Image (cartoon, rainbow, N blue to C red; front, top):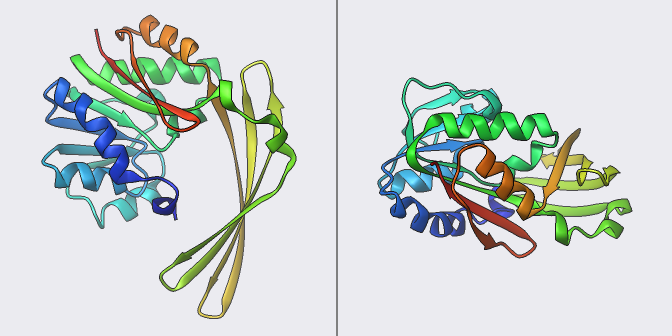
Length: 224
């Protein structure tokens, strides 16, 4: 479903110049999910390790990716080596909604990068959040081969102090005449660019390059 939400090929074209800037060869794809971006990186000659907290996601990623796939939390990544670059796309970092989460994750990204290595990640922009949007149900329908997925979502519990909220999802999955209904929720956060720039510096990264993503933004920062 997410291949219809996130333009993974565009993500690659956006991050590629930053990988080339540091002559990256070995890349860690953090929060790799089902491996869509990881597979594109591999197709373009990078040696990629994929990392995700969900074993179910990793199981799917193993069907399309050649590289190593490991189950770890981005707040506490541990490897016996360092990488030339780390990517964390698909707004995965927005799940770091507490100050402790942010600090742990950035310290963890610093730890797994070589000196001069590149960290690239994207986020919701707190300056562009439409708060009137938070009380409305939204519905999107995805036709996926032989499966129809209707996703309904609504946001709630907005915290003005740190621009975080809870998103509640209902998935209606229809296939072969059968219908399943699943519910899920997650706490996520939008960030001010200046806040993250300051946090990156605090955790040993150089001043980031910021790229607009139509209401969201991507940051690329080298490890000092």
